[in-house]
Image (cartoon, rainbow, N blue to C red; front, side, top):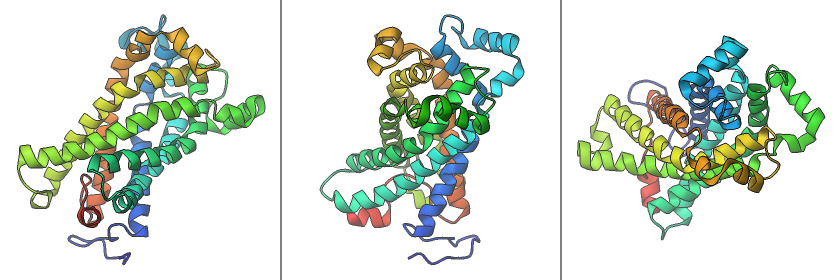
Length: 310
């Protein structure tokens, strides 16, 4: 356990559930989340504008056109550093800690089913991941929607601290948990069960009997299903987060009242579906590719040591 091996075909860099394994999962989560979120920065910029000013930015096509004409093409990449570093840190915590907590809880919750383990593992990981993300998100949203606030993280962090103190960085933590905790719990659980379903009922073969390409294909299908389901559930909290960070409302209740119950679920949902589905799919693909290149199995289900614990 924990022995480092040569990273060649058929051998593993680290054994599963060793310190090196969790470190690899953390690095894989950082790279997969950071790069995918960076790639969709223009869509994220538009999403935030649609949430904050839905009258002006009422559709994807007209929204992009308005941003391009009024603020120039560079505006579409505003806040890229917050996306890359913030969601990179979040992704590292989320994926690395999920693997750790899943192994931990499988030995503690021995009388519970798999779904319970997936739920509590993802929730535990997401709590820490959002604490790490929150300061980056606070600066990113302001940079994207307030052109004269700051150029990026380097000048945004000290400016926000000077004007609002430490509270300014964590003003949206509770709504962020409200958005990301349900999303993460549903996303990981849907992914795990989708992987099991595809192998059992579609491919009808064990994961070990499938090629690496087939395994990564299963990862992509399960990842897209997980992203789509999680997006619908988390949309109300995502709208609240944007409202709070842009000082459109001072409290969650005020934000809910101002936005309206129906709008909480529908505002920016099409663009979030466009965003989150492919992003989650690519995250799982990159994450599992890193695992495969390290000689490890792809994600999904409770494997070996986990199954024995249950």
